[in-house]
Length: 203
Image (cartoon, rainbow, N blue to C red; front, side, top):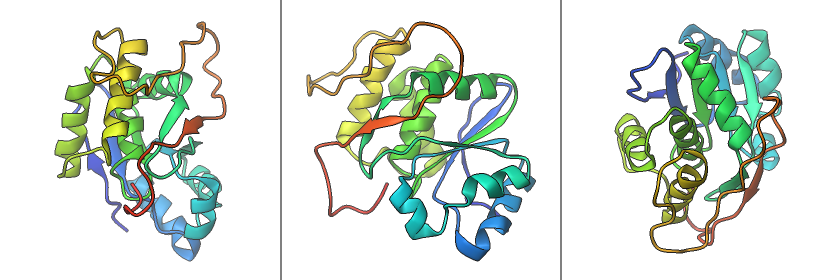
């Protein structure tokens, strides 16, 4: 079963991609086998627990582990943004630098997965607008799913990537202050909903 991976043109030792959610239920094991065959080492999912239940993906971590893939969870509401992904970004960038294949996944592979891939690229030294262009080129359409998500990545980069600028229009979408250096143990990923909602398909 061939996974729908949108591989980003990153010229480093590892690889980075986004994808929509895998098929769940009885097809989940085969989906993870396909990802392992594609060389995937790490999956980070932005799906919420409710989405996991609805899509039959509550066993995703176990199915991934069974084929040698590390599964990380960073739940973010549909069309929302995370609050604290500094430790996660450091960890994902370290995986890429070590030559591993990291895949960020959400519902449609457009919004939330773009933010997680964008955070990883920022931690690898890529400016936010360039990071979004790289993910858009891989996805074959403009991403992320809304302006609040795009502005959030700019703020995150200004706070944690060492790039000037931040939020260009002052919408008040702020990144969480940097934690002191320490263990790369991954905290529970926290989030906030964007002001745009509801009638648009999941991203």
